Image (cartoon, rainbow, N blue to C red; front, side, top):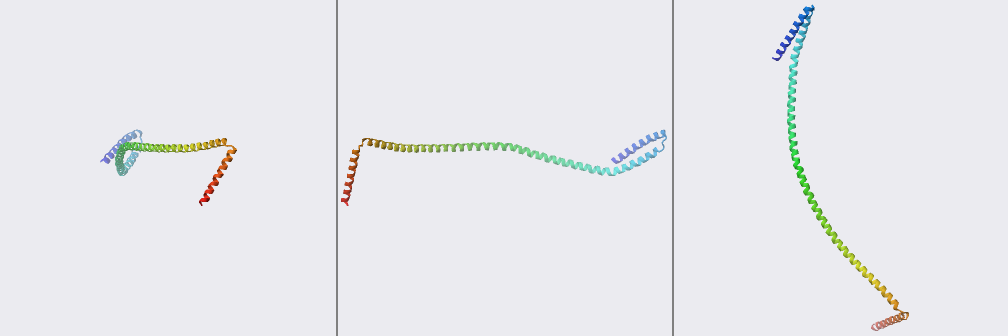
Length: 193
């Protein structure tokens, strides 16, 4: 139906143009104009026929391609909307996951802080005990060294006093007494054997 309407429109247009040209040709005296228009009409009819044969399948395939493209675009749009909804859901869940992670991290940090405080307290106690033991040991060593030093000083002082009171005659008398004591001990041992 559309073809028929198009063909009628073209023929009427050509006919109108032909009549106008014929009137102009009669005024100017050009007799070949009718044949030129006849050629034009044949050419237009041939082109119209070819267009009528080839354009509808082309336009139909083009329409089909466009409709297919629209269907694919709608499908892609639905898939994109679905992915967008999934991403929105993930983002919503991500906020909750981040909050959970923060709470869990905070709890772990508090627990780790308590553990470190307890370990530090234990280490301090150990160091205090060790320090007290080292102080006590150092005190004992110092008392022992002081006692040894005091004994050494006492011996030196006693030696100085004894040397100051000893005379050569007294030394000779002590030596003689010592020798006599040794002789008596030897005699006693010999008599017991």
